[in-house]
Length: 147
Image (cartoon, rainbow, N blue to C red; front, side, top):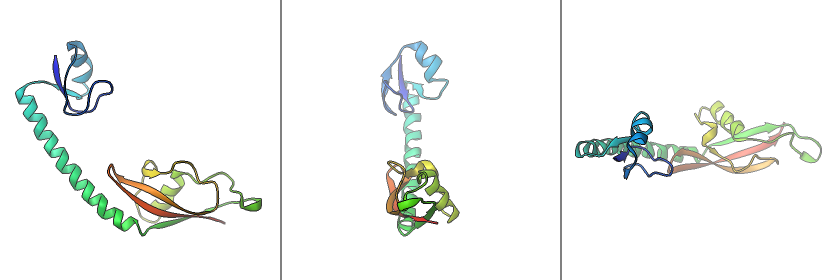
């Protein structure tokens, strides 16, 4: 049975691909989860229309994210931490701490959008990327200072 994938499915294909699957897999897994449509001309047109709407919506979101990124480039946050001897941090500064600090400043940022390779474990100034959109990131300055 041929189906048109509405979303990317692991080990099967990307969104928009027409793939051949067993009828039971399509009927019991793909169709109930709205991951695919049966391959036909009508469904192909339906997918094309849906894809056009999604692309337009994604483009508008990307443009607004770029505008927000230009404003966020000037943003910095200061995080006060407790330190011990020789300025050694108790614990570390995580993405959740940075997101909470930005939210307190009035910027609605989710902790998952803070791109931090590893937690910050020393005092100093760091540049951290914030993902605003799939294709747009904004750098911010994070100041880690002792209380």
